[in-house]
Length: 363
Image (cartoon, rainbow, N blue to C red; front, side, top):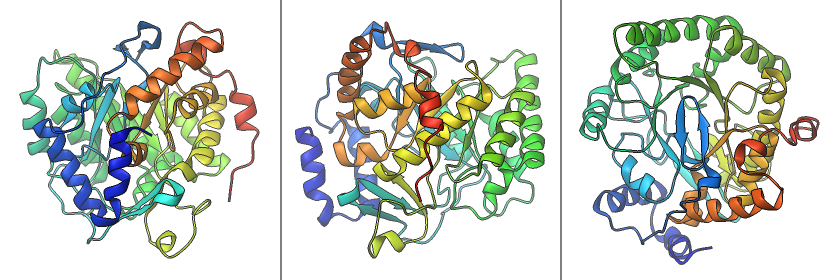
């Protein structure tokens, strides 16, 4: 663990989790984070979704909900970052406290509920960085009280099309009642058709054809995964993200573990990686998949790639390892890729899909 990570861990008992997150955003804004030397290794580059990723390690949505610090995160050595989830109207989310750390398990439980400043604020911040380098994806969602959730997602595509490197359609948060129902075959088909139609309409009007990815939950049965795979392929999704947080409590125990919300971090790694591999087996080798859930080390990132991911994302690992985590993962990943006799991440993707897919899901 880096010195910054050790300091971060030492402060945890004294600073409430959501307050600490707010302080981290402010520190990134002001350039007060410890200096990090990003890894600039062309062997880590990935070409995907029509984009050139300098490395396969990204910051997942949820950290920078309001597009406040995408460039600061990129300067820490992330190959890309994803802002959001952004909803059309600002919303406060669920009552506090709503983030709970489990340091002994390297985990976090959250029930934030899509708290964000809304489209207008997010758009102003992204427009202000127009022309800067770096890949910034936009994660879009629906307001909790939306009369038409599909319309909210379509509005997100329309609003951010000029500024998103890619879109993530988030239908898998466990903290908005009924949201995961959009993963069902018919509902997902209708949502994807509307979103892709809007994306194509924007492109036809002279805009860029922005890739659209769908983020799924790790708690789906195999039949549900098969439905998602079929709809994604038929509906012309450009990729998938596997996975969001889990409602399972495998790997954690005690009073905090009983809190409602989605579990992320180390205990999610096994479940999310198995789901990722099963999804890869269903969609075949071509459809891009970003692997998320429990990535904290270079070995974790390598395993996600081998299970079938083209890129990986993390968030909870940043909480425990500090701002140097992306650079540390990239350094170790480069060594592991070379040791495997590969020239880059693309040659690792899918090497162990069958072995991972065959493993039983944890309880």
